[in-house]
Image 1 (spheres, one colour):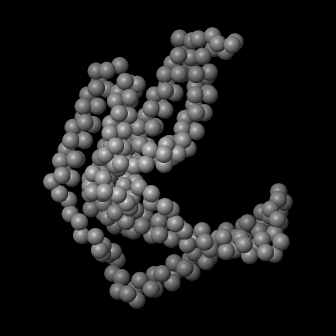
Image 2 (tube, helix red, strand yellow):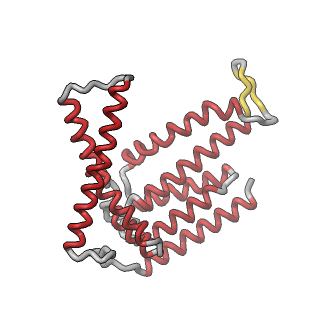
Image 3 (cartoon, rainbow, N blue to C red):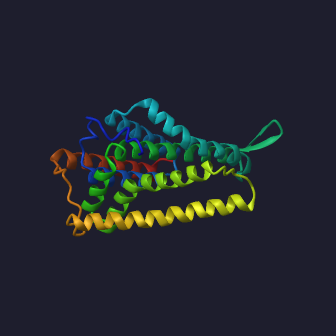
Length: 251
């Protein structure tokens, strides 16, 4: 199972309704997507760090997750300054470095980190079940919400089925290589994994029907939105609006 390191806590964001946090995360992400000013991007990054402080998450674990994301932005720094066409260039060690390319790489890096930190702070502080309920409360089609919940619940079961088949192949002295036998064996493994997953899905569906499943999952969590949730939503919508206006006037 995936460890939900951030889903359990007593911070301000942990106590907020998942639907409210989904709205804030989506609005904030859309605002970041249209930013073209590096100053406004830095302001958005500051807001993301404020959310991170409100979530009281472990800085070390967050830094590890950001490290994987910034591995992709690192390649932008290796390519954009040397390939982006611009009027201003620097000559360093025989290479022409575009000032506009550096600016674009910095802008993408800041926007990426701002988005990821905001999503970690807002969505990781709710369990997948709470996010599914939040999406349902936002009138997302119920079937899509259930697909999300069941996918999270049973993706590990499917992976366990695959590992069982793979161990069985290894016990029969299977060795991977670049040959037709290896390709054929992995094709059989994936095929049998799909077959076993289908059989498991039928058994799960029969078990649910036996227990009276009528197409609706009833949650044991009866928490309701409070005035603080709506106040949190209003404040951050105002912050997002201010950032949008800054984008219009700050270059």
